[in-house]
Image (cartoon, helix red, strand yellow):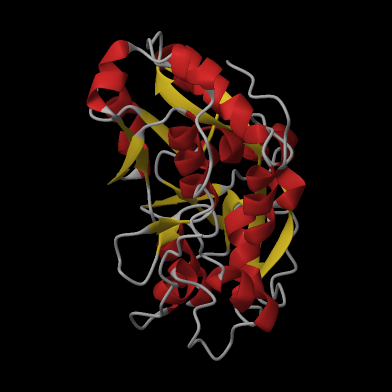
Length: 306
C-alpha cells in the first residue's frame, strides 16, 4: 500500500500545534494519538472502480479523466496537510480519494478557504467538495448534497474550565465561530436565542475568526471565553493539548449533524457521485478511515441526496 508522508511539526505557536497536531516530534503528544496521526497510508490504494457508478459518469469527465475537489486543508483530523505541506490527509481526503477510485478518475485537490467553497462550486471552479460541510437551507438552494458522515458541534473552554461554563451558561460571553461555518450562521444564533435572549439574558457575543487555529490561539491567551466548532476538531485539540483545552458539551440546536459532499445543484455529476459515495460507504476502507482518525462513531450507511 502506498504511503503518504507523516505529519510534521513545522513551526512554532499554538495554532500550528493544533493544525499539525500530534506530530512525531511533539513532546506533549499522547502515544495513542501519535500512532493514529502517523498512520497516513493512502487508503484508496487497490480500490477498484464501481461499474454502476462509472456508467453514470458524464462523458466529459471520462474524457478529462480527473475530478477536482475543494477543501480547506487546515482542520485536523478531517482535513489537513502532511509534512510536504502539499499532501492532503484526514477523513475528507480519504473519502475524496475513494470516490475518485470508484469513478476510475484521478483526483486534484484545491485548497480553498471554507467560505469561498460554495460560490466556487456554483461558479465551476471545482467539481465537488468534501469538507465536513453540513446541510443548510441556504446551501441546498445552490448545491446537491450527499451524506457521508455524522459529525456534530461542541463548545470548548480553556483547560479546567476556569469560568465554570456550560453550553447553557454562555450568555454575554465571547464565543468564537469560524467565518462562513454553520456555527456562525445557524448554531450560535440558535443557541443564543434558546438559552439567552428568549429568557431575558444578554445574547452570546459571537467572535468571528478566519479559522479554528486562530480561535484556539485566542482561547489559550484568554482573549475569548470559548469556541463553538465541530466536535471532531475540538476533540482532537483536547486530545493533543489537554492542558490547554477542554470540551464542555455538545450543541443540540440548529441544523443536522450529518455532513455531506457538495456539488453544484443539478450537476450532471450528481448521480455518479452519489452512486460512488454509496459504494464507498459499503467498503471496509470507509470504516478503517474513520477508525484511523478517531471518528468511528460518525459512520453512516446511506449516501442520501438532499
